[in-house]
Length: 168
Ligand SMILES: [Zn+2]
Image 1 (tube, rainbow, N blue to C red):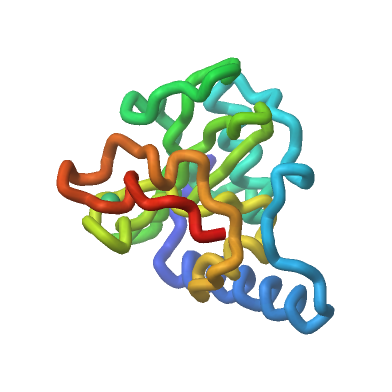
Image 2: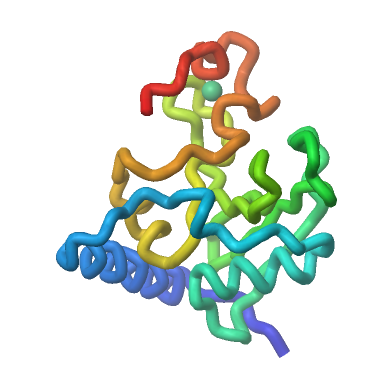
């Protein structure tokens, strides 16, 4: 029987992620999430997307993960199934993620957060493991952008970000 995560449990998850990121940084390992390390995309179901989120964030089995088809983001060419929106509800807050394929058909999991330019909630960076998530939480600049970061239809009409070239 799944239970909803408490805000305290979510804080513990964040701490674990920050610790993993700090440990990786201390060991001198690169933080950039590369497409080559992402698992090859085999998910075609919401269930597999949920399983991948659990794996990446090392979530306990009892943690509730809600999934729904994402009807906002268009399919990337070559994608074998639609994007899926995942949510971890925790008390009064929740974390949202987009599970989709990148252009090489690798699994791309991205936290959804406000766009720095227009404030719309958009997929941000690709996270492949807990340390990536920790890096994202602490605002690291060298994570790989989500393939939908600039192209997301969620950006407001006057948002300059979709027209800006990649800086990395
Ligand atoms: Zn925007």
